[in-house]
Amino acid sequence: MLRKKRYFVLYPEYFDKKLSKNEGRRVPKNKAVDNCNLSKIVFACKHLELEYEIEKDKKYSKNWWGSEGRIIVNPEGIESKTELIRRIANISRKLKKVEKPSVTKKGKSAAKPKK
View (tube, rainbow, N blue to C red):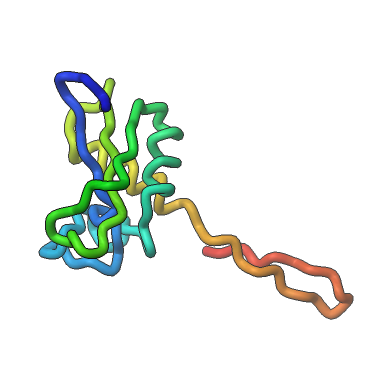
């Protein structure tokens, strides 16, 4: 476990588009992510070069029956938890599912870019 004076705890529910603000979402719907999971948050933490630790046995209190865990982050260089949540939301939102390639008339596959 991170033994720092200051660390932030992040749950996937903070970024889940399906949840309401009352159910635990902390970002606006336009910045929220479909099917948010720990791997998307881990990718964002790696991208931001933050020290983190995954705790899969912990549950989010508002979703204790379906929560998959949490991430503890050491936010060196980040002012507040709100700023950290916004940065992670911006990065994880850019992660898009890879679409199945479609077949063109000539039989070659061409992937459609998702907008």
